[in-house]
Image 1 (cartoon, rainbow, N blue to C red):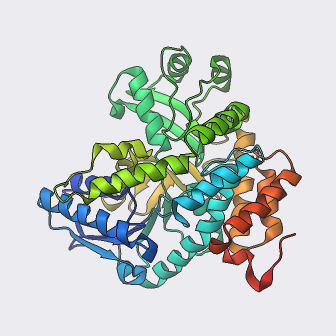
Image 2 (cartoon, rainbow, N blue to C red):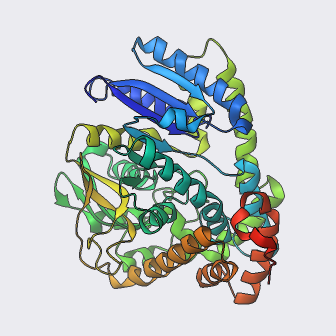
Length: 445
């Protein structure tokens, strides 16, 4: 790596890429990138060229010697890479729209990473990730895979359990968003706040909050439930207020996605209303992306446009670039990531993926042991881990019964009958991207 770093981004035509490029430019002094390869598939070629040209203009404006390469040939890009980042969506936003619309017909939450939508995103994504890992074993065996592709926890779990690859870190912007919200609540700079995170991806809790090293968890929970602040959430999740007594009793900070479990009825009602009035989140994002790509086409644009923040990925590049920077420079700072548990959370198997505050080293994240999860949150976390494990197995094997089992044990499903009806309709709807379920003319039960 002495002559600079080679980074490959798979899903390089994503609307998020300018944010990533901005993060790399900002850190060039400590992260001397020589080559950035943006990779996409033929269906994404037009977007890749638009985003890639904007990336080149951004690098030129910064006056940095980073070579930006655009390609549809993944293997060509991967050769001798140091870091590989993945940020793709199998079936594009049209597939996400199905994940959100179909469950609603059965009065079940339709969401990108939770319930039936989360299962089907995993079923489509995991075989592709495992193919990428095979290529990496051959072409860049020393590289680290940094996965942003959702469902990040399930994808990390699948790589850890169904391949020999261990150099994977899953990343999400939920923990950093919580930290920013807490800093705002306390009216202090984010770097003065430290939150101990533990749980799973989109199922992570802030267990303790420290301000300048002093435990302020109780004050933060009191402040969160005082009614003086808008409820912290992600752009893609409705900010329905938490019950103050519930949060105080829970004794931990939930993430925005917990609303799907603790406020299921209200969230479902809200989804029905939104889908009827303005479309599902995927349909809203499709419009937003069209506008972004129109902006990106402007040959005078050479910065990340502020409109990108509406896309829902706030702080995404900061999290991604900080992680790569810390690994490359062996910084040993603490960041929340998805990594192999190795005993850090006592109630989760050692070989499973967890989302947890970890010391970031050149040899990867070292999760900070917390012992057991508090009793009030432990059961739900274990139930979602069971769902992830069975879902990952279904993705790898194309086993219909395993997919049905995964969906039925998910807390967002009311019964095995409804799970089966949704499973059958969604398998048919996504047939093109789920070849593993349709081999040898397998018929649906």
